Structures are given as C-alpha cells and as structure tokens.
Length: 313
Image (cartoon, rainbow, N blue to C red; front, top):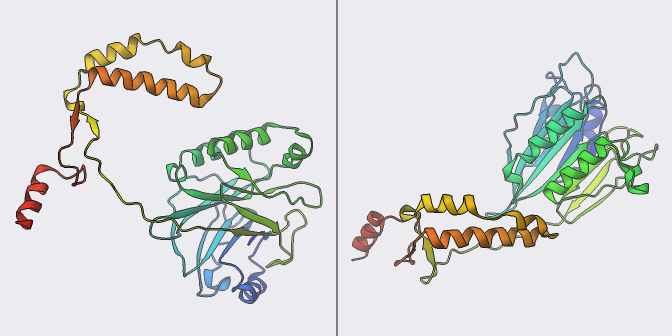
C-alpha cells in the first residue's frame, strides 16, 4: 500500500493501530511526506514484524518531505546505498530477493512542489545512472508533484516536467500505471515499472486521507525464474585479443564509413549494421582460438585444471 500521509509526528499512535489492524493485508507499506523527526522511533510506527527504512533530507525544524518503506520480515531485504542529498527531494531504495536468482528493486521518491527543473533533471539523471536497474525488475513510486501529467493523458499537452518524465520513462522503457486523479483532477503520485501490476484506489488510509493524494493499492505478480545452467560448446571460437593487431584495427576503425548508419530509420537495423562492421574488423585483426577444454569454465586457469586432474587421479 502507498499513501502520502502529510505528517506522522503527531499521528504515531493512530498510525500504529491502523497498521496493526491491516498487517496481514500488506507485504510492503510505502509512505511519502512523513515529516518524521529524529525523535520518532520505528517501534512507534510499526510492530516487530516489519523492517523499516526511512529518510528525510530536511531539518527537524522545517516541515515537509520524508519517505519510508516498511517490508515484512519474511522478505530478504537490504537497503540500497544512494548518494543523493537535496533538501527538496527524498530518494530511498531497497532490494528484495524474490528467490535465489531474482531480485526486485523498489525506489520511493518525494519531490517538493518548489523543486526546480534542474533539480528534477539531476534526480532523473542519478536514477538513470543506477546500473542495477538495467537488467532487473523495479518499481519507482512516490509523489512527483507533476500537476500537468493528467492533462497530458487527457489531451496530450506537455510542459517541461512532463517532458522530462516521459524521457525518463523512455530511457527505462517503463510505464506509469497510476491513473487515479485527485479532487483537482491531477495525478501527483506515480507508479513507474515494467511489472504487470494492478494499481487501484484504496478504500482505506492509515491516517486521514489527503484529498490531493488518494492512497493506492499496488498488486504485483511475481514469477519465479528457473536457475540458469552454464553450458560450454567445444566448437565456439573466441577472439584472442592478446595477439590482435591493434594498429591495423585502429586504422580500419578510423577509415570506416559510418555515415550509412544515419540512413536507417529503425534503430535495431542500425545497431545490427554497426555490429556487422565492427566484427568484420575484428575478423581481420584478431585471431581466433578454440578453447580445447570447454568442460571447465573459462575463468579456470591451467593451474586449477591441473590440480583438478590431479585430485581426480
């Protein structure tokens, strides 16, 4: 469940009781605008059944901000190291191991209404630099405070903040799944993911519901992936870069005609053309070597293989 709670410092008892009543319904609780001061302990908000992660970049003397993720302890969960410290923006991330081979990442964001375009751009650029998100499943959710987003959905209008969000989504090839507007017909709280998710308005709030921020239930379908086994094909030829003619390679790359790449309308066709030319040069300048003993992993050196044979004998 996700909710913008508009401050918890004076609502800890009510919040705790509300979470206790519903603790069997939610595996993960995500909150924005907690406003939490350092004097509030995790045990005042959640029972011992939850792991609690929270951050707030503002001083206790200043209102606003703060994000929190609480995860049931039956999940294998760790906090991500995130080095992004703007008072107007809070960013928190966790990794949850779905099984031995699969992880999902959850990032929660709060962007203050007075955040500048450059600060938003810095945030998106920082997240785009998190390589762990490239090959793994993720959800990025929170209060993005983009007031014109629903206008874009209704009549395709755009402004700088909407444009920046759309470019960010294109970068990760993800979708924004929350289409529940508030009383002003704005969508401020977003759910960005590649997951197959059901996002719908919650009929329940841990604290009094803010009319600007309808609470959300997010249902995620997780599928367990099978372990991938490494196979070694004795017929595979590898490039032997130790014996490559690099001077000839540099010369061929320098003289290659790359202009035809711009003529392709389809990016996949252009990439294929690029690789064909690149590997054509490799074929000329880099000799190939057949790995004789492919029953051993490629990172086994001669000493390891010799010791294995000795042990077997």
